[in-house]
Amino acid sequence: MVASKGELERERDLEQELERELEQEREQELELERERELEQELEQEREQELELERERERERELEQEREREQELEREREREGELEREREREQGWRRMRFTDRTRIETDWTCPRQRFWNFEYGGRGIVSVEEDFNLTFGKVIHEGLAHLHHGNWTEAFGVCDELTDPQWNAIAEGMLRGYVRCYPVFPVHPHIEKELTHLLTPSLTYMAKLDLLYQKEDGAWWYREFKTTSYQDGKWLSSWSRQPQPHVNALIAEKVLGIEIEGIEVQGLYKGRKGWGEDTRQGSIFAYGWKSLHVVGPPTYSYEPQRGKGWEKFAVWEEPGGAEKWVREMPEQILLEQFPTAPPIFLDRELAESFLEQARWREAEILRYDQQDLSKTFPQHFSECEPAFGAACPYRACCFQPWVRQAPLDSGLYIVRTPHHDTEEVG
Ligand code: SF4
Image (cartoon, rainbow, N blue to C red):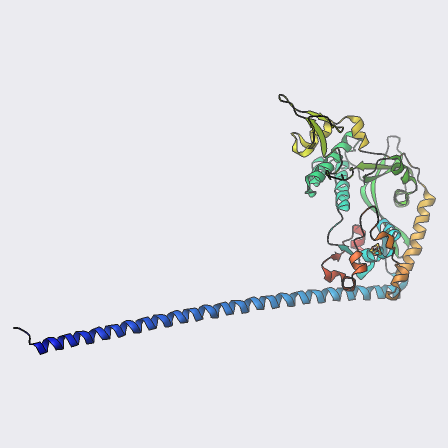
């Protein structure tokens, strides 16, 4: 049956109606999609906002933590000051400690002594340790192991020096020392701490480098000094230096022995080069070699400037420090260990040193915050001397904000005692 024209038009209208409805549905879906996207964006923004808020919260907590630590530090400083106050009230009744470093620092600059040993009750040190001190400590530790027969440990301590140049110098020194001098398998009096009462409440702490008996039974005291000098002036300077005399005298008093004499044993570390070659001038770290087309190089322990010669790093050659020192000519090796002529113990000098220490420590004990300039005057000539290292307390002396709270500055930390006695006492 053929549809009438009117029916066909109705069908078309229906189709168009359906088309419009479908179009509306699509638009609604698109609208819904856009809304969902908007919501997601809003959600992301909310999360970012929350993350920022959390970040701010963490920063606030860190800030509070820092403030609490600073407050605790101030509290400790106040307690230290109260402690000093109590000490002053009690006069001589509480035990105090002194040693060579404190006294010699006081000679250099009394204000340096104040920062280093008195500030806050214990003193402060720079966060950056003086490299010369670190090197000296490694050598003393290595020598102590050698004199106890622990060779592996002795050479192992050199690894505390991460700079290969200094590591090689330290190992060369220790290996060279073993070649040059008799090393006793076991010796009890190496790096030995002794204490001696200067007054009923003042203890002098001494650390003996090496106390030993020669074959004839006589006691000798040996001090070790890492040095950049090896000339006669350096060698003769030791006869009037108080440290070896005082250490030997304290050993006599505490151990009840008689010291025959003192030896000062230098361990030469060379000097830093200048100009283009700033390497340390130590034969334990650098030598000279000449390469050949065939066969091994020719080595020299003395400077060579001829054609084909070049300076080389010992630690980079086969055999390293062990081979280099083993094959070192004896004369050159001995030059690395300048030894002062034997010194007779000057008991009068040592007693005089200790007597002066008694008076000075009594003066420091009476120190009152008001008289810093009187008790600890500043020796400005030592702040940045023409030779040697600059004073590590320049920031304390010359920057008011550091002076007010050195420990808050991040430049200083509380001093750790080097003598066990002080830590215990
Ligand atoms: S900076 Fe100068 S005055 Fe201050 S402690 Fe050091 S040497 Fe003394």
